[in-house]
Length: 95
Image (cartoon, rainbow, N blue to C red; front, side, top):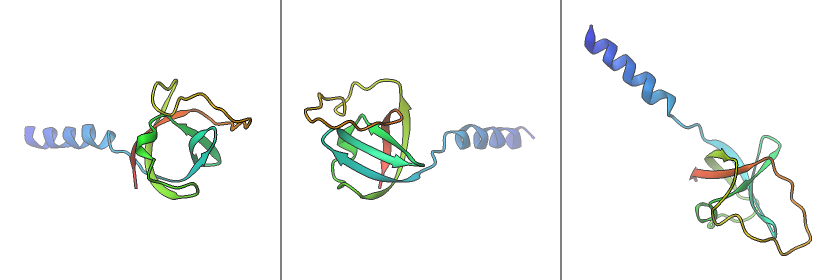
């Protein structure tokens, strides 16, 4: 009985950490790099994860929302374009 409870608990604990990947589109412009998903754009904080993907690429990605960005995606914009976005994100996995 203890073994059954232990195994059940392990499935619950590790099952909750499972990430769901989303199909999104990479958008690159002079203001930064974004993922477009569910009708919203999300500005990418960790650009090194997406540097190999071109503008318009469809990707499978998992990410988490951030309240602020201290990574490579937070740079001074030098163009006169405004790209509205929902929030900063950190890409965890991308294919």
